[in-house]
Length: 200
Ligand SMILES: [Fe+2]
Image: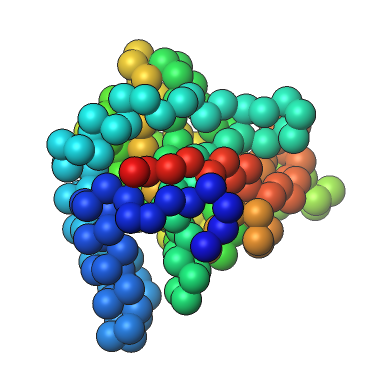
């Protein structure tokens, strides 16, 4: 168990972990595994104890010292590698255009609302990239979005603070992902910095 993680956690989260481990044990393949995860995560973000606990979660902003956004880290599974994170955006907060590399990301909105925008990227002859919006939708409180590996996207919080509980197939920082800059450059990023936080 990585430092800073306290067990047992809130009962709804312990139940979620048991359910996810069973899905892995049963050998449910992708993407079905993550569709099942979506249903279990809906229960977590609707749980009254989790919602009450979330009122105290700190805003996980951009850390200028590391040049990375932060995520709270509640849990990392020792056998299957999936992690449970939270991302708390202040009103009007947004992410730059990026992908999540080879990881699956199951993104549950616990409070507030997010506008999720997908992009296509075309490579120019000089190695820069042209991104264009391909799809946009709102994720409301209680909704869970399943984000496939390599999907290029951005998330925008509305007028309220937004709180998301996120399940990732592996811990950010252990694999490569890309960010697309305004000048067309594509850069490798390590993904959100992991800030251990006790969910107990
Ligand atoms: Fe993202």
